[in-house]
Length: 538
Image 1 (tube, rainbow, N blue to C red):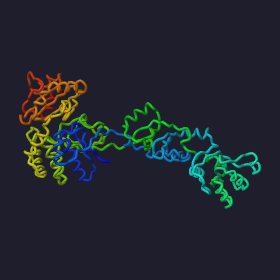
Image 2 (image 1 turned 90 degrees about the vertical axis):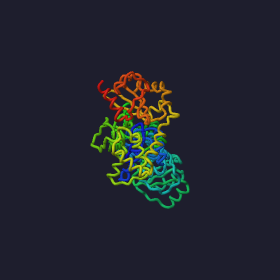
Image 3 (image 1 turned 180 degrees about the horizontal axis):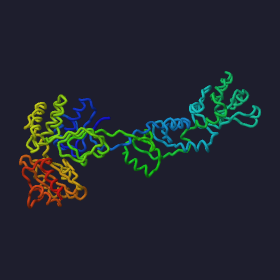
Image 4 (image 1 turned 30 degrees about the horizontal axis):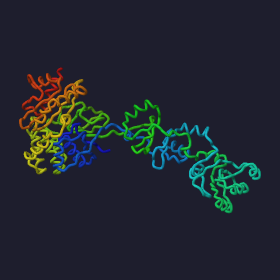
């Protein structure tokens, strides 16, 4: 199974570049991984990926267990034109009590249970046959002597009467299937009457003259190792499985359905077996409530976060192999020990750079450029209070490999990131937004890096309206910081009920929407700890 590597739900440059850089490293070490993103990337990250000619990772919606992850009965289906006998044998072979029917394109056409098969054997019309000659051969272990037709339809008769009596009492025709031994007068009457099929018990051999006459008259002949009674019993099992009482509209499960949703549905429907189909309507197999239904969880590696609320939907159903992060410890638990790498540095990519050195893996120019970009982004061009010597040393070495000037490239990147033109307040708020659980309360903090503060202050009321809506539905406190790296501080906009909390958290008096707080630029080291300290005390 391929391992997914991804960051948090509001993918910033560190999240995206960490995923790509770590995936490359893991693959070089022999693992099979792919980087993923959990949302739309921001302008800064778009600039970085375009600059170093690296494609955007594909989007990951969730890692919940789906039906396709379950070990169900694959290929537990049968063509509707196969026989009852073959259907029953397949059900025995796969130890199932029902089987889906499909057409020649594997599209689901019906569903039959063992109960319906039993009803047919007890109450069904055992005298009529409507099937292929191949199905008959399969059901009675026969061999072809004369084959004139592929399709056989008729009423079954056993020639137990004398030839004269049979000719007098029974009008044979092409609508008859006759079971008869080496009684040549009866055979002659049957062939002259052009019956549809003659079945010879005990593998009786016929004279060539009889065979030639049958071929001329278009009479099919099959020989079987069974006796007449056994043939009469088994031949009805050669009928098409589709011709018995089948469920033409069974309850189905799509292979992309969530397993938990399937379990919930079964409580309402209360069936035992369910055909599995894909989006084309093709049948893939059968899932049984009584089956083992074991599954392999999606393997994942988390970067730049370790908080349940910030991670992909369904993370509790995934197999977390490793976490690499530089934030405070969140609320993700695992059932087994994992590799957890945490370090108080300014950027996750600083840690991943160290992993390249540990494993002695050469860093390609484009990967170096991505890791450098992440470090410059997270540390505000190495000026943030979160910046460490490790970040500075990594940035210097990565810039050399990427063949870029740190200052010149960093300003280009920040300029690209600071553009808010064409973005709505809601889009900007969510462009770099993180959720936190504080006791029984939900906290949301967004951060925007821009040099165009006027564009935001002109729409201040719109920002407050969006924050109030978010606070009304999902959060107890929601706040956004607009960081200006030139002024080395941040403007603050908050939901209407959180003014006192903002004042207490940052030592402000008579604060107002859009107030500027000098020297507050780091969400991780300044913004989050200050707000948490107040929320945890209340």
